[in-house]
Image (cartoon, rainbow, N blue to C red; front, side):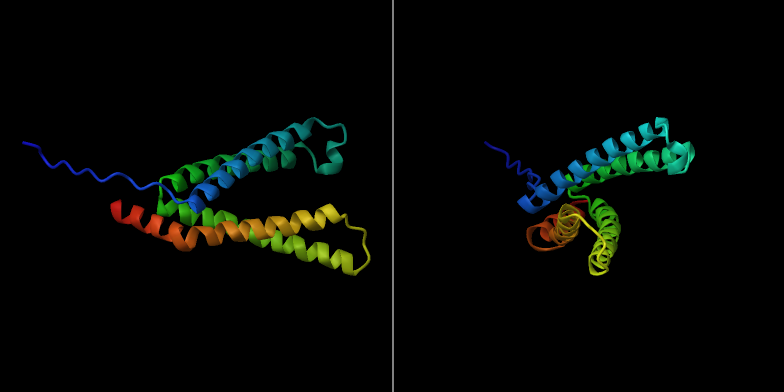
Length: 154
């Protein structure tokens, strides 16, 4: 006599979602570290040239809080939360727009003969491509099915 206890196991996130989650955690941690470093800039000797202590502290605190928010979003993405996917899309979308604007500025600087390091150009291109890839990875193939299943379960 055996009872049929069929318990549906939660499906494991596809590799593309896991990659996005890992990248999102990395971005969050880097934002937190950057925020701390910017806050520490308020003790620099030439702080008045940078705008004073208040703006530097506010920028650092905002960056730190953005990092904490990004980590929370990564946690939601790992569970398949569709709202976390939307939040990640918004944050990465803003990052993409800023990256594209930075790329335009770098290219204009190069066109006008201003000295721009090759590493700046490469880093800007890599950032734009990486962020665009992350956004696309959240909405195509296995990731789309994973988030659809998770929203149906909820």
